[in-house]
Length: 188
Image (cartoon, rainbow, N blue to C red; front, side, top):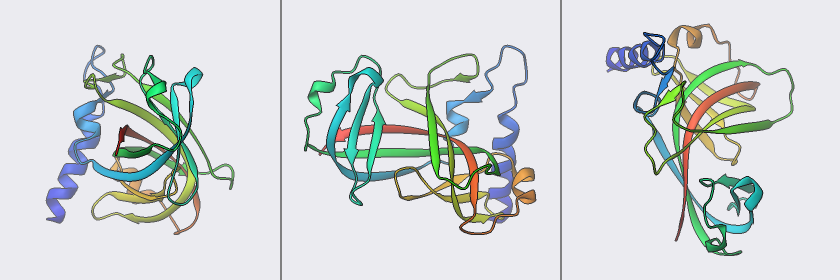
């Protein structure tokens, strides 16, 4: 079992490297090959049409901006409506020491482009950079467990097993992670 997971991690890492100048750096199928989905019940708190986002209130009372495709009809998301936010965790592509001890995050919505290919038309993919605490690193399976911006614990496979071996992570320490996820919001 260990060897098959380790082989899978090496295969994923090696497939991230472009083999030709015209190949994309990342492929949707590779990034989400070992994906796990987290579903969170929430309530609509408002919308931000200029940013194509729906603001939701989570069960822990935190508020979280959920991006929707540009041009979406945000009028359908009425305040106080009950929704489910589904987040599919893709590969963690980078983990470095944090420059600051303040939690933060930023994201960019990714479309089929020169560096990322194969995104299904009904899927919204984000690349996130998060300064957060790492709960654990499992070097035998390649998974990193960390506190996500939504306040829940997330687990993502690290794309580069060699870098993972070199990480000296103490649970609760701040690190900067870069990873991909796909996000969806549906009425309940």
